[in-house]
Image (cartoon, rainbow, N blue to C red; front, top):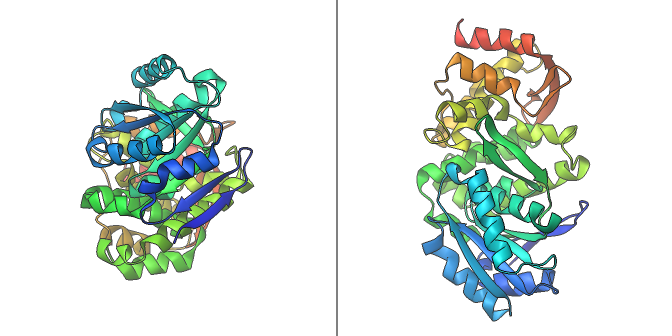
Length: 358
C-alpha cells in the first residue's frame, strides 16, 4: 500500500511512500509530469549498479527519453565542478523547461541534482528518488538544494521544491550499518524537536533491527513532521530553523574531517549532544542530556567528535542562522519541543569554551 503526503508549498507536490515504488517510477512520473518528454536521471557510482537500470527501464516504458548521469559517490561530488558538468550535459541532451531532472541516490545527489534543476533554464522540474534513510526522511523533502564551498557546507544553494518525491523502503536493505545509522541521526532529531512519543518509540526499538520493523511508520512520521514545519516557514526565516537542531556545531564537526572522516549524520548526532548541553548551560533546556546520549549510542552514533577550536568557531560564525550579529541556536525547551534561541557570538563562544574546557 502506498502512503501519500501532500505538500502544499509554492510548488505543491506529493510524497509517496511504499515498498516496490522503484518499479513504478515511470508510471508515477508520467502521472505527475504529463508534458515532459525528456528525463535526466542523476545518480552516483554507488547507486548506479544497484538501481539505475531498473529505474531507467521503468521511465522508458512510460515514454520518456532518458539520459543517465553518474557522479562520484561522496560529499566531494557536491561541488561547483560537478554542477557545471551537469548543466552542460543537460543542455547537450536538449532539455527544455517542460522536461525533468530526477535525483536517484542519497542527500548529496539530491542536493546537487536539485540545484542543477533549480538553476538550469531558470528552473526545471525535478523528482527526488531517495535511496538512503537520511535522504528519505530529511533531505529529499522541503526544497533546499545546494553545493558546498571551501568555506563550508551548503553555502551556495536555492529553495526549489521537487515535483514529486518517491520513497521505496526496499532501498534501505542495501545500506551498510554505518549508512543506516547516519540516517537515524535525522530520525532521532525529529523526535527531539517535535514528537516525544516518537522519540520514545525509537528508544524502545533499540537499534536497526527494531526500527526496521516500523520503517514505513518511521519514514512517514519524519516526512510528516518536516512537511508541517516547511509549510509554516517555507523560506527558513523562523520556525523551519528548528529542523537544524544539532546542525550548527554538527557542520563544524563535518568540516573538521574535511567531509570525509565524519558523515553528516555523525556530525549532527554529536551536534545534538552538544546543543543539548549548551541549552542546559544557557538555562533554557532541562537536564535531558542523558536520554539523548543514550539513544544516540543505541544507534551507533557518536556523542563527541574531535574538532580544532579554530574550525569550530569559524564554522559557527558562518552558520546560515547567523542573522544581524546573533545566531539562532536551536535548543530544546523539553524533549519533543525545540525553539530558535538567539544568542550573541560571545555568548555561544562562552558556552563552547566551557564545553571544551578552555
